[in-house]
Amino acid sequence: MDGNGRWAKRRHLPRAMGHRKGVDAVRELVRSLKDTPVECLTLYAFSSENWKRPEEEVDDLMNLMRKFIKSDLPEFIANDVRLHILGDWRALAPDIVAMLEDAIAQTAKGTRTLAVALNYGAHAEIVHAARKAAAEGEIDEQAIERHLFSAELPPLDLLIRTSGEVRLSNFLLWQAAYAEMLFLDVLWPDFTPDHLKQALAEFAERERRFGGR
Image (cartoon, rainbow, N blue to C red; front, top):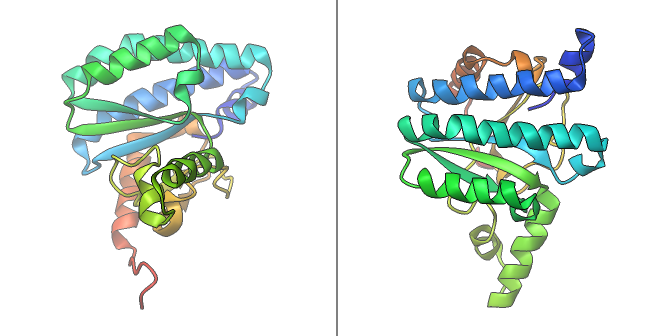
């Protein structure tokens, strides 16, 4: 979900306003899932590199997270959405960790999954999985996959990046090995459920060979 800061800058607004508008886009997208075939939507909300941002911006992002969990949890439950977190999220502030643990428990029986990457970096994820696999014995692809943060999620089929940037930025590098990719010149706050539906339509037209002919 890229482009919150640029969205605000183009409108001569504080970056915080871009992040708040980005949260609105998340909310509308999650609400639209019931009208799509999507089993799992994964959002890259806060990377392990985002700590390098100014303290004021990080604090605003954390406060937005608190507000989002508190305000939207009842809606997740009502709409049968299960929350799953990727990354070293237990290193976040204790009150956020407690809120997330409660949200995960309350939504555990949901049939659609919203996976949120928090304090996440793909390099760190792969190192974590390799260490876990090594502790069990032989390191192979299956052993690493068992210990990825996404182990209980369905395979990654389609990866969308907004804002016109054409890179993965340390996101789901292992999982993206055979994923289809779509790079959109749309800033995240302007991303709508219609953009998702268009992306799914394009995905449906692609031929997936997984290394075969």
